[in-house]
Image (cartoon, rainbow, N blue to C red; front, side):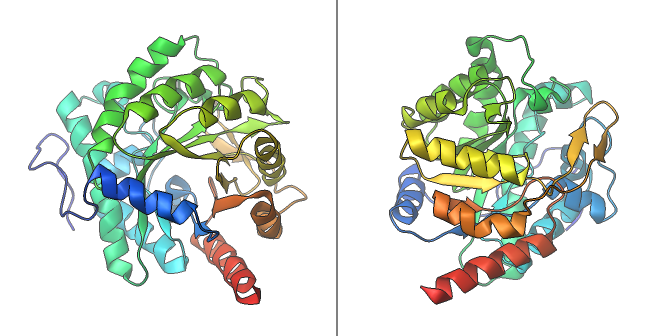
Length: 331
């Protein structure tokens, strides 16, 4: 598959009718959620692209690879599927209208890349074949776009209406794609939780909202239970997740959420290192509770989606899948 010209749009970025109507997408996810099966999420797409030799150090991060070398994104998705992932998270996390505008793009080109991210993920699934796959359309927080790394503290200085407006068009575009569900992830602040709850509920596609936490709170200091209450009242949100944090923080957050709401849970922590958005590098070592050791505890806490975020490799996903398969065989 060749590179897609960034400034030359040809088509709408869709290759086939993989998922049908909004009704069928809702039915697929809702049918899954009434059971007790656990789906394996993928790992850190951006860091896996870096491991494959791609440069993800500039402000566009993985969006630049999607723009300049979509075959690499397709191959990275295939790597995670081959490792045992059931779900691929499309490479749309950092595809934002203002971010690409700063790189010389136009709004219609941003829309094209958003749609392309989902198509590429489906093609990665086709390359591997096997069991039915799922595609999540990623919606990164404001901090991953013009917020310049503030997804780790939520210090945006924006109101709920301003954040809702910023997210709206990207959600609308992704809701028109062939993804199975929207995944608003790494959400650090209660204002952004509130903004996304409204926008996701207005979209014609089911969604999962995933917050990022530290020391029992959202990154802006809000108690986790407040985010859970908002998500539980949002009709478009089918599950609530925790990502881009330590394994220990993720497990504690799952337990805290389960105490206050009945939403199904998703969890995909980091490998144990932390991202320094100023120095643009990873620091620290893995904590005492490893991601692999936590898998049974995640399941016990109610997780229906388990995977990894930054620095979690296909090999790690294979280990998670093996743990879950062994658990299922014992039941």
